[in-house]
Structure formats: C-alpha cells, structure tokens
Image 1 (tube, each protein chain N blue to C red):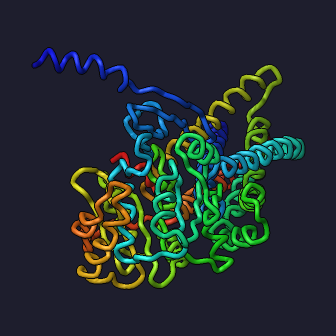
Image 2 (image 1 turned 180 degrees about the vertical axis):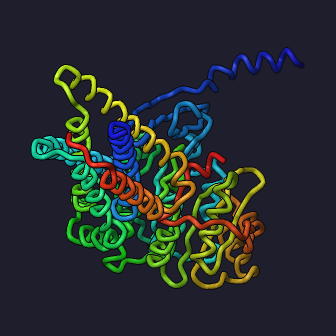
Image 3 (image 1 turned 180 degrees about the horizontal axis):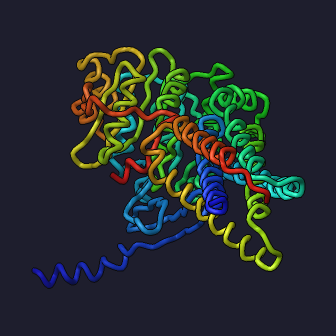
Length: 197
Length: 292
C-alpha cells in the first residue's frame, strides 16, 4: 500500500514539474518574448534547481525518513508555486525594467519564479528511493523503477499540457490544478498509516 | 501548332527551373532563397516549399509580386501620410522599400527576430536600410514594451510575423494588441497580415475587435490572405477612402499595384462567431487552433 502510494506521488511530482516548465514559456513570453534564449533560461533554471533538489533530497533522507516528511515536500512545492499567481506579473515587470538584455532578464525572472518550487519538487525522487529501498541488492532496481515512474509522469505532463490543457484552460487555472494535485499528494502522505521506513 | 508549343516549352523549360541559391538554418527556421525565372523568393521551410515569404522580380525589382504586400498598404486609405512607421517581420524587405518611395520623410522602425533574415534580405533581396530606417533584431513584444516605457508612438504599424509554420502566440493576444494600441497615435493605423481560415479566424477577429473600436478586413479574390486594418477612432468614410486610393494610383504605378481594389474590398464589418473565446496571455493555444 505504502509503496504504491510513493510511486503515485513520484509520478505526480514528475508530471507537475514538466507541466510547469512548459507553462514557463507562456508565462515569460509577454515580457521577454519567445526567443530561443527564453527557453534556454527556463531549461537552465529547471536543471539547476532539480540538481540541487536531488542533492538536498538525498541529504534529507538520511535523517528520520518518513512518509509524513515526504508529504511535506509536496505541500511545500504547492505553497512555493503560490507567488506565480499573485506576484508573477509585477515581478516580471520589475525585472523587465531593471534588466535591458532579455537573455539575462528571462534568466533572472525564471530564477525568481521557478527556482524554489523546482528545488522542492526535485527532492521527491531521492527521498522516494530512500523510502522504497529495503535491501542493498534491490536498490538499483528500485531506483530504476522510481525513475521510470517519475520520468513517465514528466512525459505525460509535457504531452497533456502542450496538447490539451492550454487548449482547455487558462494558464492560471492549470497552475491552480497542479498546485491542487500537489496538495492532494501531500494530504495523502500525511494521512497514510504511520510506518517506520 | 502543338509541336511548336512543345518545342517552345523545351526551349523555355530550362530557364524556368527553380534553383536554390541560398540555404541556411537559422536559430528560428530554415531559410531558402529560390530563383524561378526572374522571380526570386524567400522561403522559410523546406517541406511546405510552396509557401513563399517574400518575392522579388529581378528584372523589375519594384513590382510587388504578392497581392498581400499590396494589401499591407490598405492602411494608407485611412492614414494617408504616415510619419512614423513600425514594421514587425522584415521578410525580404519589400514593404520598407515601398514606404521609402511613398513617404520618403517618414522614419521606419523595422523589427525582425531573426538576424539571418536581415542578412538574407540585404544580400539577396536588395534590401538597403536608408538613413530613415532602423533595423531592430528583437522580439516584437519586447520591443514594443520597451518603446512604451519610453513613450514612443507610431502612426502606421504593420504586423507581418504570422506567415511561418509556427505562429508566435504572444503576438496574437488581447494584451499584446493593447500594447500595440498604446503605441499607436490617435489617428494611427494597425495593419496585420493574418489568417483567413481555420479555428483561428474567429478567435483572431474577435480579439482584434475587442481591442480596436474600428476594424476592417481586406480580402482580394486572387489570394487567400486577408489583412486586418484597425484604428482607435472611427474610420474615415467610404468616399474619403476612395479618394485616398485614387491619390495613391500614380505613386503606386511604379510598383505595378492598383490601390482601387483595396478601397472596394475594405469591409468595415468583418464577421466572426459572437461566442468566440478571446486570445489572451492566459489563453493562447494559437498553433493548436490553427490545426483545427
């Protein structure tokens, strides 16, 4: 039961990360255009944030790993997405006025908007591995399965967002749904029957 | 007779063979320059190679080959003497040349996102920026936002950035058109080369109509292109537009272009489905709508 839940959560984490990354292009375009360097900025920020997230998530899993703490990562991710709705535009406007070069403008804006939530969501994968692995000899297989599930989630997040969500919903609505999904994941984990990992 | 025709064809055929004289992959697209007879055309994709972006008649460089280029002059019917011109999307640089001839004192800001297009226009399409022109290699939305911050305005704005396989979605939203409107003088005009078919047609027309009090559509029988003409104040009456077209006849003769059909086909009440969802920065699935 616990294992299935962890996989489900890792899947959702992967889904949400790529969906946000894709929306990033739309969020930045009104201020910084849709030139290649805007995508360059977004991808760079996501990659740096994820790599840091992996590092911190792994570190975090050393100390009293539990499904509840795992759930807190999702809630943290959802909360860190908050500023995107409220302050997104005023923040981008500030960057736009301060930084003349749209390359560094878009880099700075992506950093301010997406860095923290992505670090948080990046912590999910290594933490999941820690919760799932029970014996050393199965660790590679568990990690492989986990990457499979979360990366597959990322693939579906990309596809769903670019093919359908943007046709059905406004950007803010999609963000709200993604935050909702993260909160639901967090709640599921917090409510899960306590179990020592 | 048939044989004579066949012979003639055999003689002429080699001279009409299309020849690719330049090919490059820029950051944004494939750029091809193709010669066919005396016509030289700029193409942006390989697969749909019938889609020319801009053409030049090497024997008669002034001739406007594409009806749409002529249609982009429709704004002159309502704003006959522009002094500050802004053009988004350079193509082969045909229109800046025409405006230099028609309104030599006017300044022209030419915004093109792709440096390679500027180079190709200069090298293969005899595009020579005059002292009145400034070329800006920049995303148009960013350019306009910066311009607005400096309080710059124009009285003739042309949008011609929508002809490739990928449509820049952030240049079709209500918010963008509001920024264009803010950069337009009170009697200025916006002329946009846009889409005549697909689900995008209604969405686009509705969005323009939501931002601009005066909106007209120009279509000509000989082409599938349509041009939207928009103003912040009501359009001058039909007689005034006709008079403006008459006045343009002489100066446009050199470009083998007749402005009268533009006045005749100036439809001031373009139709669109009432319940159409507007394109906004929040909702702009432009390329998906184009497929439908």
